[in-house]
Length: 422
Image (cartoon, rainbow, N blue to C red; front, top):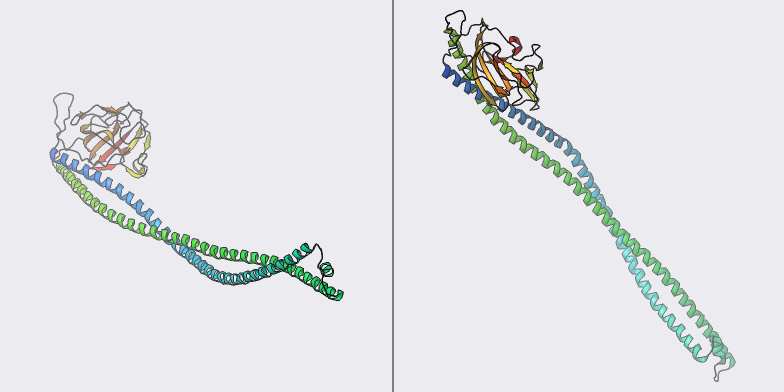
């Protein structure tokens, strides 16, 4: 696993020979305090650069989504506007239909008023006919006859038989007329009642039809207007957020520029110290008597994650891998690659427990190795080590998905592929 950028530059040392067959090497740092301070500041600046770049990546992702949302809203607005115009046209048509229906309604209402008057008049005539028939019926009942003719012929008085016959005929005609009139009135009333009901139903249907047309048109227009309003709001919101995130990105870019400047300044200072040490010939011997040793037991050096850009297994996005991940079991020994001095023993969120070893100059280059994610550490800062010295145990502390060793090499202060040294 990769930890935060850690660019260490070697401390120059001077060799001192011991007396006897076995030579002992001691490492004497030059400008140690100044260099350590520069390395600490360089680490802090590098971490800030990494954090700010990650933040900018997140801002860019947000801006991309906002741009997509804005484009999507812009693309949908014309269609929504056309839909609104279509519903407005339907509303206008519904208004015209409503006006026509209202005209038909007024005609139907006027016709109904005429029929109402006719019904009232026929009702009056029906009452008169009913009254005449009632009077005739009472007379027949009182005289004990069942016919108007018989009533006229049997009625006592001084009239001649001809006069009585004429009276009987007149009474018969009157009775027939009254009955016919009554029957016609009944028929007329039934017809008028039927027409009155039909017109009433038509009036109600026209009213309902006109109102429904208006309601449907109003509902469609309101729905279409709501769609347009929603898109306009989404567009406005996206524009506001886009401006906010553009401003935030500008601020972060300014911070990143300052952090990069700080990092570059400390890197230059460290390189200056290295140059001074090299000029004074304060270097470690490249002909290291102890040779080289693999950092883990497995001599086949199985690499589970190589050096360079990769998809981070924990964070889930592309991130630069400053070393290689070597397959190993938790608890297995971690060995120093070659002789040197323990530069740093510490822990961080991403690297977990780690050890940095300064090997001085190897092949004309300043070399530092780093060992990350350890579960135990056996050495301490300033301790001299040889190739194969056990620095601690393999673990999975920090950002790790399983037991392994992250092995890194910094050459002249820059991370390089460690496999060139193994």
